[in-house]
Amino acid sequence: MRYSSQTVERAIHELSKLPGIGRKSAQRTVFYLLKTEASEVEALAGALSDLKTKVRYCSVCYNITEADPCPICSNEERDRSVICVVEEPNDIIAFERTGEYRGLYHVLGGVLSPLDGISPDDLHIKALLARLDETVEEIIIATNPSTEGEATALYLTKLIKPMQIKLTRIARGIPVGADLEYADEITLTRALEGRINL
Amino acid sequence: MRYSSQTVERAIHELSKLPGIGRKSAQRTVFYLLKTEASEVEALAGALSDLKTKVRYCSVCYNITEADPCPICSNEERDRSVICVVEEPNDIIAFERTGEYRGLYHVLGGVLSPLDGISPDDLHIKALLARLDETVEEIIIATNPSTEGEATALYLTKLIKPMQIKLTRIARGIPVGADLEYADEITLTRALEGRINL
Image (cartoon, rainbow over all chains, first blue to last red; front, side, top):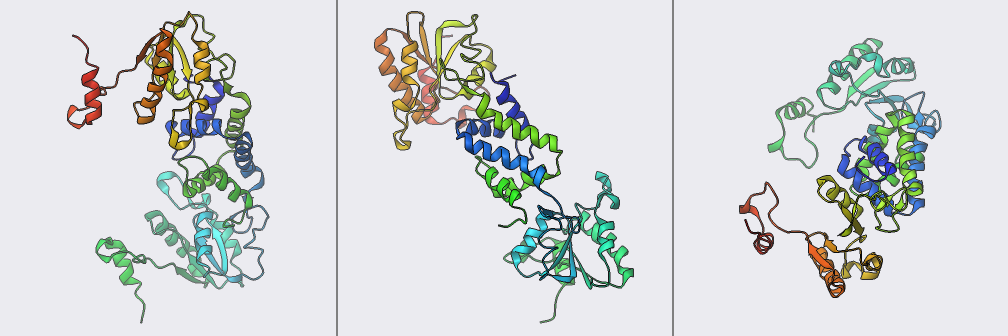
């Protein structure tokens, strides 16, 4: 024990487990909290504790939610003929921010990654297939343009293509505001492949 | 509200208040916690909550502690004739790690900083003066070698010097392992001033 208080050591130990927080940041956080109002610390502890008791995954699309099904799945105004397949709940926020997409989502909960031992059974792929009835007209595959994301897109394509549902993949190309000069070859190749008529 | 769950938003909001944690890190932490075992999250929330209920400041030296007086102040084997004056409880850990110091400590709780509105009354200076009875033979001023730390050391010198107690300041010089070439002028000046006989 390096601190004269076991409670302080325990808080540092628990905080250091969080991603991106080392022992030094954990120490700084603990000393910040020791100087903060008790009500503020209670608010933080309560909010973290509520995460596991109040938040769950939507049984339809696996988005994070407090009500099941989630507000998007239960929103009657959304276009039920399109499902956008994403890796994580975070990706839904990114799409929602655009304000351009009015369809539904499906969260895979990750990507295929044999090296990390993540196989199709570890993702919500069966649940996606179960959603594909006659009301669904298009599936947009919006996994990340990483090696694993592309492999997962390919796997889904092989599964869904035979079902005669329109299947699309979000465009990969030069990001808006970026400089062609600094674009990597693969992105440029994808940008050329995905060129559109003007 | 950007997430479909108010609990998630609240956890992100509370985490973003911590020093060095922005909205993006807070989001990452929340998604990490959502995937973690409930018992782990409870351990974290409980540890943070305990900080304010179990940890207090030692009434003698103002170190953080669970028992009052703190283990250092109540340790009969420590040398009660020397008091090392530091800015924060963290500094005590640094000295204890050396294993070289066997005296007592006194935590000021900061440094004099007129710009931030921190005056002598905001620091535990009166409590330090109250400790200076005939058993105390030496005061080591170990505030940081920053402008505020030096000003605080000067202020303490003016207060304590007339009391006929030996008063010392930790040496400022070239850190072990560093390169003279890259040392700044003030550090080099202090290293020259503090030179010792070989």
